[in-house]
Amino acid sequence: MNLSGRVALVTGASQGIGRACALRLAKCGANVALVARNQQKLEEVAAEIGTAALMYPTDIENEDQIKSTFKSVVSDLGKIDILVNNAGITRDQLVMRMKRADWDAVLNTNLTSAYLCTQQAISSMLKQRWGRIINVTSIFGQMGQAGQANYAASKAGLIGLTMAIAREVGSRNITCNAVAPGFIETAMTSVLSDELRQSALKAIPLGRVGTPEEVANCVAFLASEEAAYITGHVLNVNGGMLMG
Image 1 (tube, rainbow, N blue to C red):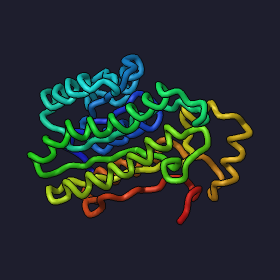
Image 2 (cartoon, rainbow, N blue to C red; image 1 turned 90 degrees about the vertical axis):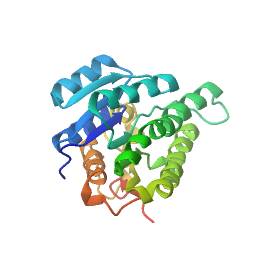
Image 3 (cartoon, rainbow, N blue to C red; image 1 turned 90 degrees about the horizontal axis):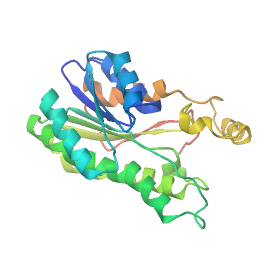
Image 4 (cartoon, helix red, strand yellow; image 1 turned 180 degrees about the vertical axis):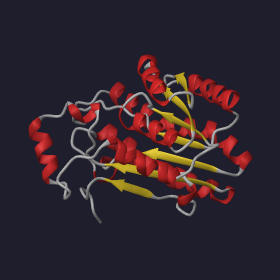
């Protein structure tokens, strides 16, 4: 999967799946724009990648900051070929007790930011008649999860957004796909109790949790020429946890 000469922008690139995606895309030859809130963590990822990475500390909930960042990336790197909408947070609570602020924060970060980032990146892709948009959704956007109504709704929304965009821009040689991870070993899942962890493992036919690198490999594939005839698709990376 040769991405030499391509420019990729990854949101939520400072840790977990986003970090793994940035490293994998850079390994494939892309120049990578790293976007996240935490500058210190961005610096660590950038140092690991080397000269093929530039940092853009950004509050992904802030529309003005998103617009400024995308303008800077195009100014610095000339274009945006690949957009990975990965930024995501959780604010778990049963729906009857969930505060509106926690609903809004999750929807704004996980879903609205993907719409805003896509909107900013798409003009560059239209000009060059080539683009790859990859949205990182979740198995819980497909099957739901108690205590995560906000998170599940945001990730289900990403799937709908993926298909709508795929239909809008397909004629311009731009694809839009989603990757839906299952139980992946990240900071977000490390806080789960042993009981919940063991329960999840029983539901995974492969009998183990996944790694961020396994998700990143799928993102790199969807970003490549090898996936040129795939669009509007949700690629499940869940060890068989969800079938059908």
